[in-house]
Amino acid sequence: MRKGRFHKSVADIGQRYSESASFDRRLYRHDVAGSIAHAAALVKAGIVSAAEQKQIEAGLREIEREIDSGKFQWDESLEDVHMNIESALTKKIGDAGAKVHTARSRNDQIALDLRLYVKDQINRTSSQLKKLQTALLNLAEKNVDLVMPGYTHLQRAQPIYFAHYLLGQTEAFARDVERLRDCLQRTDVLALGAGALAGSTIVLDRAFVAHELGFSKISQNSMDAVSDRDFICEFLFCLAMIGMHLSRLSEDLIIWSTAEFGFVEFSDAFATGSSLMPQKKNPDMAELTRGKTGRLYGNLMSILTTLKALPFSYNRDLQEDKHALFDSVDTVTAALQIFPAMLAELKINRARMESAANDASLLATDLAEYLVKKGAPFRKAHEIVGKLVATAVKKRRKINDIPARELKKLSSLFDVDVAKVFDVRRSLASRQAIGAPSRKNVGARLDYWRKQLR
Ligand code: ARG
Image (cartoon, rainbow, N blue to C red):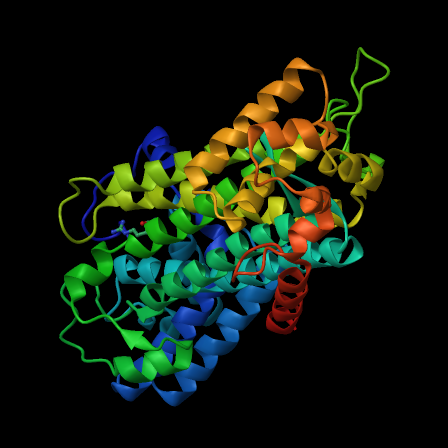
């Protein structure tokens, strides 16, 4: 590449500073696929013969196998994955190899490779998310009748089914799948053919290349094509969001695994000990997932900042997109591998959850609604039950232990049927509107997700 214009070779430190082969080599499969399709387009354009094309394809396949098996000799002084592969090809097949880069620049080549890579990762992440959803559903089905307190402000609020909680998490990850599918639309665009920034005097059949490489759209502006990294921003946002969702699930499990809650216990296989305190069992996998979310946010900020005020079309700054992209992919891939396995072995302390759910104060709102059904305006009912709670607290009693005559003093609307209010499962059964946690709704939603994920 430097043979013509340069008189002096690049300084060693300059070469090390600018090379990307050490990390962009992970794009080799996509790079090879792109070059094979490009060579086919060069045949159509009359630049490469059919015989040369055969040599090119066979050579590239061979290089791909060498890389697969770890035999390929990477040379970082060749800057990047593109030059490494091109130079190996030319060494193998001579002149035909030297024709492959006709009407192509590394600017459109890297845009192509990245889009192919992100498309693959979108599919992988989506199927990993579906496995996580399945693990959540399995846990929900195993504990379908288990009640627990639901929390707001991390204070006991109202009873729910544990399955309702898990189904709620499933909804969040379903949105992640949806978001990835949406991101795919803007990633699924062929950038190859844009050249350095202005296409080429050699006219390629881009529709043919798009078809060969499985792109459903073709970039319509060559400058934008080499400039655009929006799809990486969007993908990194999707991954950051997945991390955020995982961090919230992690946080709940961490809190629930404390002695104070005692709702769940991590399997030994997914917990660690303390080097000092022999009794400790720490939820490190969940903590690390919570922590790694910071990296995912950082990577999103990193790409956005790299792009900020960048002159239009290609600038070498864009090489920096890879660190953020690869790190987020690795981080989310690892977390999504851990979670389904960890959930499958999570021990649920049903007795603790059930007994916490039987805290009568969780049904204080039900009691107010009982009064509403008898004709009290809600604000009034809220105040009456508030007074009842205050009395109970003062007398160190539970709100369902206050005798009927004292209830009557608070409101004449209280009747003998009030005892029924304090049945948790009855309370849950009556929460029937769409999205509310009645047993029937929970069952229907379980069926729905089972079908969706099949
Ligand atoms: N390594 C470069 C990148 O990642 C590839 C494109 C380089 N183009 C160039 N004109 N130097 O963006």
